[in-house]
Length: 223
Image (cartoon, rainbow, N blue to C red; front, side, top):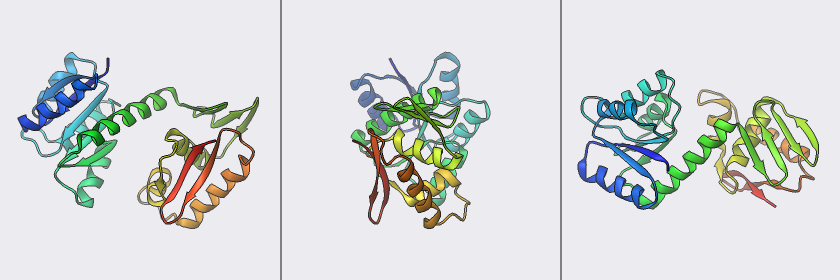
C-alpha cells in the first residue's frame, strides 16, 4: 500500500485530507509542520508528500528545500492559500512537483496524487511504453516494431513528456519551462520546429500521434 505524508497545520484540513486518502486506499501519516514531518520520515518509508506552505516551526518551502538537499526524491504536492505567481515559482524552485491552491477540490487532489505517483514510477524506471513503442531515457532511444531511433536530447525530452501523460494538454509555456527552463528565451518557433520534427520521424508510428490544440498547445494521443 502507498504511504502518504500529509503536512498541514490546520487540524480540520489535515484530517479531511487523511480521510479522503484513506478512503481511496492510501496509508496516511499526518504531521502539523515540517519538523514533525521529518520525524515521520525517520520512521516510515513515504511514497508522496502533501505539504502546506504556511506552517509554524518549519514551513513548506523550508521542508521541501531540506528534503531535496538530503537527496530525497519523493513527489511533493504543495498545497497553499497563495495563488500568486511568485509563490508558485518559489514552490517549484524549492523542489515541489505540483501545486494546488486552497480551497482544494478533493477529487482533483486525488487525481494529482495518482498522476505524481505514476510519474515517479516512470522516472524511477526511466521508460515509457505506449503499445509497441518504448522510450528509454538512459539511451535516448525510441524502439518500435524492432527498430531503434536515437533522438537529440530536446526532441527526446519533449516526446518523453508528452507520452508520459497521454491525452494531457501541455501549453507552450509549460513545454518551454519544462524542456528549456524557466529562464530560457525559447519562443514558439523553436517548439513548433521540434514538434514538426517529431511528427515527421513518427508519422508512420502505429501507437501514437501528436495533436495540436489550437490556442493552447499540444498533446499525444494513442491511436
